Image 1 (spheres, rainbow, N blue to C red):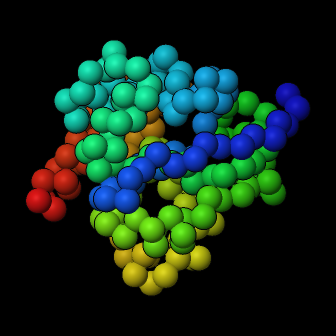
Image 2 (cartoon, rainbow, N blue to C red):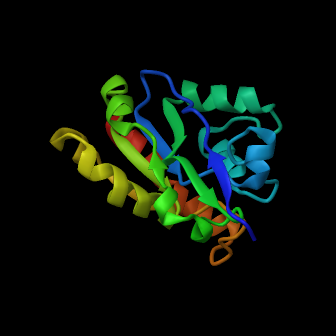
Length: 175
């Protein structure tokens, strides 16, 4: 399969966000729909709807509003890359361009936790982003959660939901 140039989405956030959820790069279905986690078998929205008690059947803009009202910011580690499919494993390393997290975290100084939606998001962040951050930003607690992608079949929905519960548990500790 030939490599395609891919550009990610802007962040979804308000300045009062206390947690940041990071993916790696939107997949083909998400890019086509211009929506985070648009693949119908991706468990991101079902999990977040359960955790934050919002209506899963709400339209996309309403679901984003539920997240920002819950002080959740949503973004991807990569701003752009080349990839031959939707799989993270197909990202061409020499094409990686990260988002500007230094500016983002300066503007969103209330971020208290960063969560990675899967191993690739964590790997990319730690390798390409973390060294460029200030010492204080580098101390923000980070936690990798199991990928909500349908390609990650090692865990069923219920086990993923239990692992993602850490978001709510950490949020309660901040209150």
